[in-house]
Amino acid sequence: MRSKQREKHPSQSEESFVKWVTIPRSVLGVRRSFGVYLPRGYGESTRGYPALYLFRGAEREWAEAQDQREGLKVLVDRLIDDEVIEPLIVVMPGLMEPSGRAQGIPVDWLADGRHRGVGNGRFERHFFEIKAIVEERFSVRIGRRHAALDGFSMGGFSAMYLGLKYPNLFGSVGAYDGSFMWPHQIDPRLKPSGRGCRLWLSDACAPYFCGPHGWDLHKMERSNPIFWVSRSNSKRRADLRSLQVHMHAAGSEILGNIDRCIELDRHLEEAGVANSFRDNLVFAPNAAHNWCWADRHLAVTLPLHDQVSKSIG
Image (cartoon, rainbow, N blue to C red; front, side, top):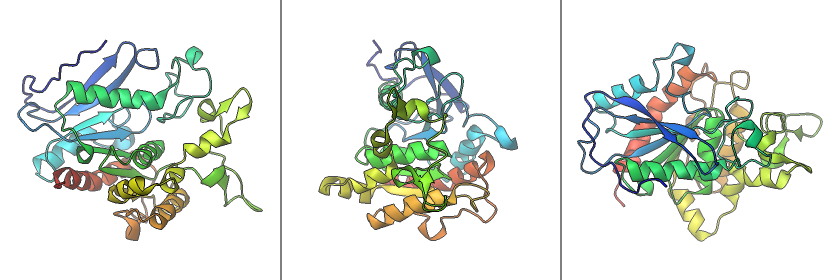
């Protein structure tokens, strides 16, 4: 049983660092870990820090230096040092199986995950386990507007899925070139009249949605962020419309997922949900589906998440 004592004021750190937190036996039933970026001087604030949950799949992807990028720590340090944003905590959940064969998303598996190292495969519950641990053990501000989500590629899907399904729990959500679902998993671009989505109806997504009796299309639809935009009572509509969305796409379909981003943004607009980048959804004409552009997106969205955390109400 994990301790309920919150680590509000540990020894102050002279430099920022990424801490790797191990859960010996997670709600999955197996050992898991996640990353936490802690800013320089962590522990000085008596008010605590806002928290950004940052998605890609494996917990170490954002913290590394793919595509000759500087890496998350350098990016966030610079924005804090330049006083573009206030210090914050960045949480990097780990949602992939050890082999990396399946996509890493916060959706529960239909397949038996025990022989693949993920126990019961309840990854949505596991994300909220991570969130609870962060709020118990680290000095974070509690409340919707102090919790943000962002992500790249399948991480963009993960951020939008959680933000649109639980708009009462998060103040803002960003995504760069998300690998979003089509409605009913029918890709309208495939002739003659649309066919099953090759991305989501694939081996990489099968553990989530394919069981002993085949593909569970009902479960897939309920895992689609578009579904949660449309499933809105008056309270959900109010929460959705107050959720700050910051969604970018790559420059073209050849370079990324612009068609999927346009489709999701169309549903957001119909539901009255604003997107900070609706008028310039394409980040840049040459923006590609890679880590360098994901970092550029984050450099733009971090100040927007910061504004929500500082807002009154």
